[in-house]
Length: 254
Image: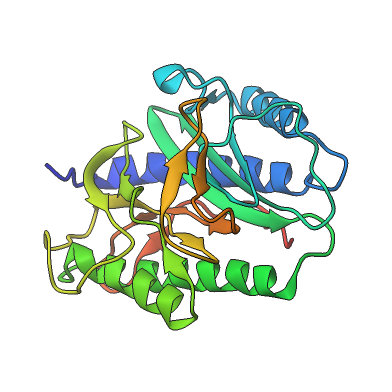
């Protein structure tokens, strides 16, 4: 069942989403060659404590990080640790925060130093695909209109869409109905209604769409070891336009 949030619940989700996004963008601003993913993780935990929130990922099904930190060919769910970021890497940071009983979930992929121009294009297109999907999150559309918009932008630019992992509904729980694939034909699935809240998150690969999970049970990488980008917003379906709930107080322009 897809939960439609009340006006009061949407107010609470705006607050949670803004706090989530502000923490994510502060962490993203720390990404640089020589920094470890553990340092980023510790900083996110510190910021969450300052905001009197709880990191949604920490302990989730046994996950040991406060953030997911995924580098280059790592698609999602990278475990923070001693790995040092190098010049030319791209670093995906996914962060969730529980505040006021509601979850915010958002992700960004950032370049560390100078990166390959094609990798820059991958990041730009993934952001474009996210916003194309968000533009379809309006009352009366079908759920797969979001999926199709993401796929059209990504594949139109010559990239591939990860099929093994999807976006999701969100609210009091991090994962609510429905699942939101990033591919598929338009015009299918549930009719969208104002007040539905969704986490839309394209994962777009430079090479093939196929992935595999490493022995740690979490880290997902591309099968061809080419880079992947991940961007995500928590949004509320609107009558005429979607509302992005995970906008930070001040955006990181990385």
